[in-house]
Image 1: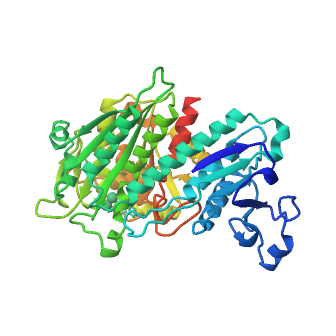
Image 2 (image 1 turned 135 degrees about the vertical axis):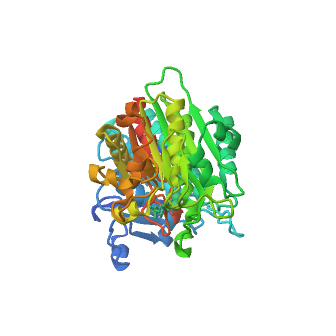
Image 3 (image 1 turned 120 degrees about the vertical axis):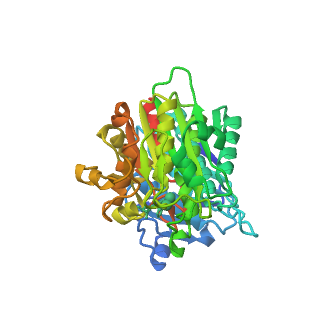
Length: 484
Ligand code: BES
Ligand code: ZN
Ligand code: ZN
């Protein structure tokens, strides 16, 4: 998709279709013509409501109030409405709530690209999108002397962010037998070649040498051997050093603590954290951010078989701590225990963030659209929350507490991989991970449970059915802020 920015007024721009955002139900605004027809069609201009006036080549979309979130989703809905049409170019006026900032423009462009996403890898008939050119007019704000360079920059950042999100969506949506641990490693090394990132892939022999016995136990029953990926974006004189750690379970059958059949469907989603880390690495590199970013992915498949790890096993993790396995479906934390230990051994980071589809309990607690942010210190958690707001993703904090800490006690090992109570499962999983964070890093770490928003089986907001690429937008915004 090409984006063109112009100060020409809308009526002087040549395009196949005109998009009119009807803000705050203000039908009297100059841009809104065809008022009688809109009334006849019962178009109320509710947020995200669309009406295509085909014989006038005008598409109307309701926007409740101008802000990034509303504009992003309205643009996504507009593009989706045009999906089956033959229009090749569209023109739209840009809206600014704050005349000195280009964030609304960025949100609009993100909305177009996120809304245009579709996944048809497995369809024999591929959908062909006709729309190629988006022309954005700054007509209304011409007088305010907008910095065109900053506007162009906002468009570029939006394109990089949305492309990286769609890249992550593609990985998540790919089926487990087309995307297994080595596939993730290949994608990472492809990114490294293309973008000049450093890339180190650990295979079973190296994983053994690194004593990642918890990760290796989870991987054992699968015919697809595990990988740990370490990608690095290393600019000169970085303003900060950040480690990102992603859960990359390319399939989670539950292992011997087998999932019920209905819960197993969609468990290709369990690589969403790792896939987001790959997307974030792509974005930071394309943005050339002056922040050193290390992306780690624990890529493993959790299967059953004669060689499977079992409830009752005691595993010695990389950190030296022993873990009693009481449920093989709580495998993500075992993989992350070792990858977190590895990340801390390899990099002395200012902050570490892990992204993981760790618990169904987080979805029960918060609903499908919100991630759960946990940790010992508010600083990294607040960084995530603030970035998520700017990015248009929902995230909220869940607090650790001493009483839940006790629930992970094991009679025979240092810790149990599940809690002894059925309540507070998102938090006890976060506390489990905390046991593998070294003392000096306790305040530098935040855990983000993305089990809900990373994959939803219906379209929501600017997100499609399936993988949403959740976390790419939030973490990219967070890293952009550190780069300032
Ligand atoms: N990958 C799942 C968590 C999950 C569930 C992600 C639903 C997305 C949607 C994780 O490995 C898991 O199975 N967790 C168990 C933990 C339990 C055994 C303590 C869960 O949530 O049931
Ligand atoms: Zn599981
Ligand atoms: Zn899992």
